[in-house]
Amino acid sequence: MKPKPYLREISLKRDDIENFDDYPFQIPAIRQFETLEFHEDVTFFVGENGSGKSTLIEAIAIGLGFSPEGGTKNVRLETNQNTSNLHEYLRFVNNYKKPKDYYFLRAESFYNLATYVEETDFLIGYKGYGGKSLHAQSHGEAFFSTLNYKLRGNGLYIFDEPEAALSPQRQLSALAIMHNLVKKNSQFIIATHSPILLAYPNAKIFQMGENGINEISYEETESFIVTKDFLGNYRNSLRILFDEE
Image (cartoon, rainbow, N blue to C red):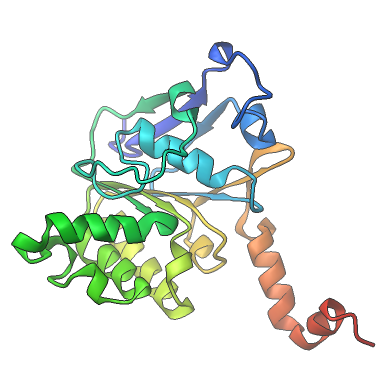
């Protein structure tokens, strides 16, 4: 058996769910899913806002022992008590080999994580984040410092919409960092809208929507289709959007 993927699959303990009309089980993609098998390198979740991507990513992270707001497994941080109980209904199948490094990177709560780091890491000079306070950098710079310095390889890394803090150029740089980490025996599980990140070669892409969770190709993602169509004929797209002749 290969050492990766560290997290091989998850399944929904459907018999334990009392009411599928309760949140988050009323979300169509979550209501219908049974088992998902992860790619040994990179697995993406895509879908429209409200499709359940972040809910599922959060549940996977919590189920693996992370704080809901991100960081390493040593971080204990939950500023808002608004997490779902989905993690309690997931069954995890792990590989025989455990990763040596873990990190949950979440765009929407990264400021809270940076504050936590500010309060706990200043005595060691922010050693794990490039030697500079995250709050002394822009949001994007702090996010990128985390990618560049904190992730060491041989790791299991879970990202929730990392593109929210990154310019297109930084997203390209993030792809290069991801690839270097994959070559160092790392596994990524990522929820994203970014057509740049989704281009990672040979990744597994799961589309979440009204028809459940289905594997699709890069060229079938809405991010790719909409971006390609807009950039290929943006003047006409703008006229249509603005309802102009």
